[in-house]
Image: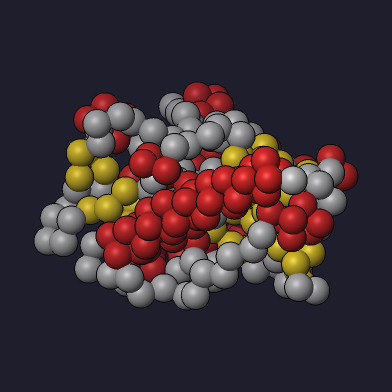
Length: 255
């Protein structure tokens, strides 16, 4: 019995140490990104997460992040629906990527465009998301968009207009060409990504493919109405003919 008690004690101490280490990194990120001010973060045990997702059942699996870094699962916690991220790539605590995602996520509950504006302007240091891809945006039961995936986000220091990234990160097709060429992150990095995201919503195509196909004549597409030809047919099904001007406006804004 002695060895069994010793083993349980060692496991409990190891778990407590891990919780403390991760908690310290989350706190560091909260202080770094928002001066320690955020919505309360509630911790759940592993057993609660396993019950909520039915042991990460395939039936509850939603989507794998484009970079393969995490898998999303739907579940129920305390009688309310939740989205659970299971990290596929095991980041070490010192990398801070997972903790960065947790700390910034605790500050958001807004629609996508408003969320980006909030990140850029609400704090003394601008937070740049850098990865405006569809699988980082989720809809709740009321159809409200929730922005997620902050593990690649960066801070622009107070009073500065840009920050240099040592390694260019993000998803090809949604990355600002200026950022890819120079490594300089600005608010325009997210503006470009949001435009690419809009193109995906409209066409159900990868933005880089749309740009490649129509790079020589985007304005002509708008003027002659040809842009309707690249709109996702499923989107058009629920639209009246006289409402196509909305698609035109949306397409112009995305460009």
